Length: 633
Image (cartoon, rainbow, N blue to C red; front, side, top):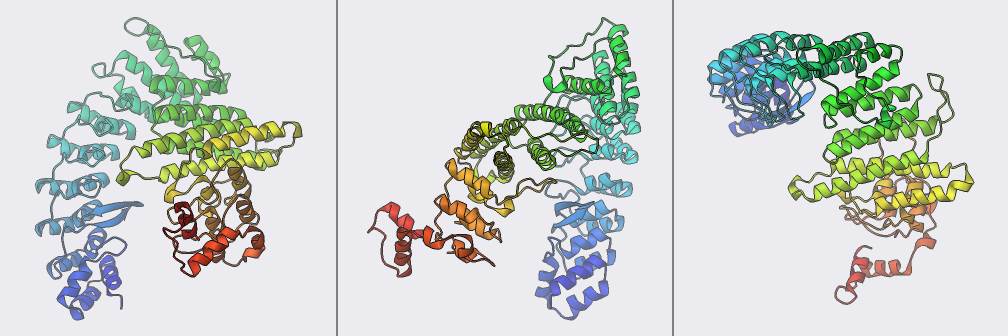
């Protein structure tokens, strides 16, 4: 009988009688201690009972079963998994005051934390449990203990809009200007969430207008998120906001109204208000510092006078470009919103069938990300992946009419190549970054994903080559594509489990999950090109698998892939770390269905198999290179 599950389920459901029957009716003391400490799905009975509010079960587990009151578990709140959560944290987060009181009365540590350094007090602040907040504070909870991101209890109360908790924390002199790891303050959190009343409260308690790591003030943060009531309140406080900051906030707010709220009229009003402040506000005229015209923005020049703004209403597209130019000028290229809204606008153009405009904007955003962000950043990954979806859609729908009545044009191979080289650069720089890290910190997850995205672009190129209609250009185009793929292969970069580009091209697990799968992995035609440009057909990953092994594991092995690998020099009888060959890994297929075994059986391989089969001594008797060859058979 699975007593562990029975005990856990009874604690989870609050079934005290069932719990008593099994723990004290059947089991001995040592078994009880073991079951009470056991984890099911990462969670102990005490943790799950505390989270679910079963007071009598919690009391029984502590007093009769002597459960460890500090033993943490893994729990889910609002769809997010919280690792290392002590019972007190769970009770506080779920709003069970009686259990919080019970746990503390039995000696629970009031400042115990989760793996991310979140305290029970912070958990109570997050969901607005004021009575629990008060109880924890009066029993020694540290209001200034921040989580690993540097977010304090006051910050989370401000962000979630819990004004009574914010007032209570401020009554205990909570640090109003303390900064998080990324430099934001509680005032930033109010501005981003739109909590005007708490923002006023913070200012009354001495909050100042500081900048975060992106150079953003709370005023600009409100402009970015579109909280006009916050902006309009703050710009009336000259002791906090300068005239230049007022202008920037109004212009940024206008850009937000264009892109997020699609309200051109209100956007124009804010831009006019900012322009009036530039020319007629207190003090000298503040002229705009105009940037160089950018092709991706259709060479849009930012408007510098009120007359020009009036003409914008007649050209909505020009207005959208103005929003992008303004945002980049004020936020700068490093701010994630700058590239995000460029990509957003590109996606809108793609939906409208204006694919060239989309490609230009997305390339501009990608260039910005690669210049400003660390290698393998998720935002850069997302941009590269978006290109694979766009090109896949265009190749799959070429010649068809979009929902807006436009015809999907053919993909220009130069555009795929343009992005492909940027992907190669990301792979190369990411690999170098990982090489500098200690082994214990080296995680190849992001590198593998970017490598797969890069191979997907290569797959699109090879498919485009297969479909090339203009024979006169085919040789030239083929040379360009092969050269580009060679530039990737020669880097010899390996992803997770030490898999090479050829491994990934032959692996079903490497396939991208996208809406428009123009290429499928394993891909025989991509494998063929990789082999042509020098990929090693017999390279082994950390599990001893060659690309041919992974092709067999695809189940079924795609027709043509085995022959492609064997024609490229793959050895059919190499063994992996489990002693399995290509043939032994096939399920539901026979080797002769995929390739002529007689054609690909080498005498050297047959001899090596005989040596291994009859255990003929060979180490030290043959050249070292030959020893490795025999060992692999």
